[in-house]
Amino acid sequence: MSALMPAAVYVGDGQMSVQELPIPVAGAGDVLVEVAQCGICGSDMHLVLERYARPGTVLGHEWAGTVISLGPGVAGWEPGDRVVSNPTPGCGKCRPCRRGRPSVCLEREPPDYLSFGGAFCRYMVVRAERLLRIPDALSTRAAALTEPTAIAIHTVNLARVDTDDRVLITGAGPVGLLTLSVLLARGVTDVTVSEPSASRRERAKAIGAAAVLAPDELGGAPLGRPVEHPYAVAFECSGHAGAAEAALDQLDFAGTLVFVGTGREMPRINHNRMIVLELTAIGAYNYDDEGFGPALALLAGGALPTDLLIEPDDVALSGVLDAMQRLARGEIPGKVMVRPQEVS
Image (cartoon, rainbow, N blue to C red):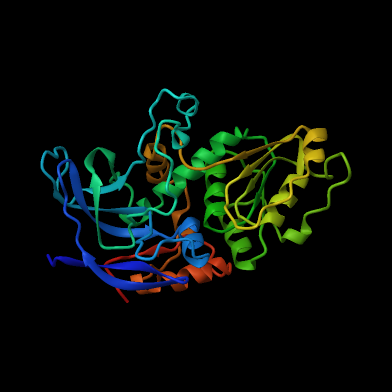
């Protein structure tokens, strides 16, 4: 094995380049993993396209791969094992942890949202205790959906959606499509998707949305009462301020708005409407206290349409920036997988 590996590196000014970096060394308790695929996340796009990332950073966190070698003291794993990496658990004692929300554990160090040692590279070192084995029934490529699927499960769980609820999703990019898929897998079938891109609306319909609309087809809200056909729950998955405002307007009495997608522009919240209709707005950040296990099980059980959720062709490291730009323009419906073994 060469001492160097290719990686897609953020170099500043919204640009990325493929560079040769040292292959990390597995220390005590570590495992060296070869990344098979890594999905492009919305957070990766914000960090690059909005120029938040630190120059020299390797992004990417939605990955699956294969064990290459073991550090000292590691048992229970062998080279060739297919794996994903579980999130770091919370303390288990603080208020968020007791409520099943370890991603916002109060005992953790304050997060550095710009600090990454990501997977847009060929090899990574991972703590052995964080590894989960990919089930035999699940391909390694599909297993790279584990992390965003865990987020979608957490999102749906926080909203406490019932199977007879009428649900709205604003935004049919990868996040919205996964949220739709998890809802359908839970037996929630009355789901409407609002999305400006025709190709994304078509993908949502193919996955099983009961209705798909362009945003301007959502009716305006009358003063102090619901629209004619309101929704019990709305998931805002686009990160656009106008979509959040429209989603809030579509809610029924005691409805719930879940903020899922992130964005730069802040929405204006109609607090009077929230008061009169007794609405709830919550944010969904990461994962449940069970970690990635339920997501792996859901994917391995075949309940999610991975062929529709993942774009058919992987991109090489040199294609990461172009894929991000196309995703941002709404040209690509599903999850784009990066294959780090391919440089160009």
